[in-house]
Image (cartoon, rainbow, N blue to C red; front, side, top):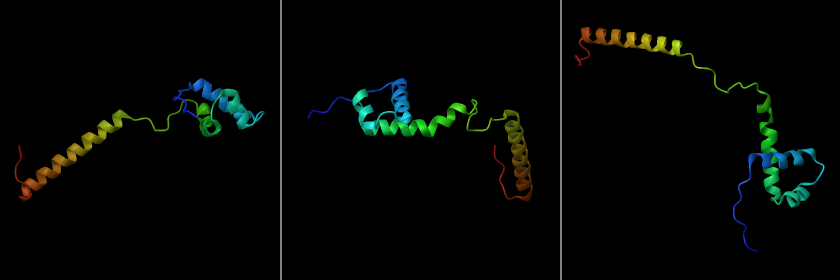
Length: 100
């Protein structure tokens, strides 16, 4: 039996097949024959659909918290001031040579 060339299925096709598998009206084997896809592939798409279905209802919220640029700039300024102070203190104590 010759191997079939690799096929790229559209996301719409994958969703359609996965939804049919979730419905459970036909077995995975029947769906595989109907859509000409390997049963393991259907199972994988079904699992992905079930795992990611909650993302459809998250309200567009991202996983990472929003970045407050003003707070970050304030922190950079604070750390720069501390570094300058400590560098001056070390220079006065003779523990750090003058750098330019």
